Image 1 (cartoon, rainbow, N blue to C red):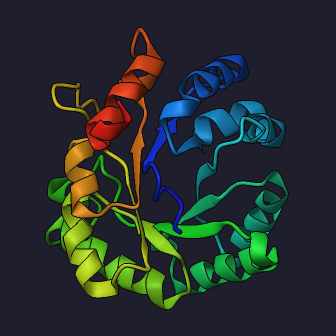
Image 2: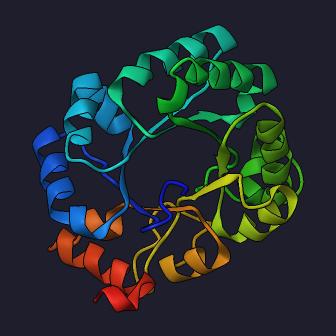
Length: 238
């Protein structure tokens, strides 16, 4: 069973306030499959904050997007291992040697190792943004290029947009984890995301994990928002 197979929704707890993150996590626990903690949270609360959220009892995705020389990234992965997270990510654009170092470092945890996934192209970027930083062609071309490198380097999967799921499933099959941010319920504000889809569409396309943050945490009732998304995906649960 892959992470997220029962409920693929991982809620992004994007806050610097640990009490707020814990309150959100406890409220939405019955309705989500996991929690995502990013740099905003980690920089404010450090390893102790991650441990506190992990104690809620849901899988935790440490969205740290490590990107440095191979030795430094390997050290970063080893530092995360004692925190009990289920997933950690690196930027695939860091190259094959860096990703292999990350995978090797995670493997030192044995059977309890976290999944290591590679960020391909941020869902806040489109073709025009990529061109501005020297990458020509469609965003999907760059996603496939980096996903192939991540796969060859021993990573467990990648972060991609929903529109790239079918392309990557065809290339790598069902065993390669696809984590999809930029998920917005119908009618929700898109914000700074450009390559987005709804939870139902992303799930139908075959995403392993759907990352949803602001539509839940900025709701007046986060538990109700999470429950509505869960019920959209699994009507029998309502």
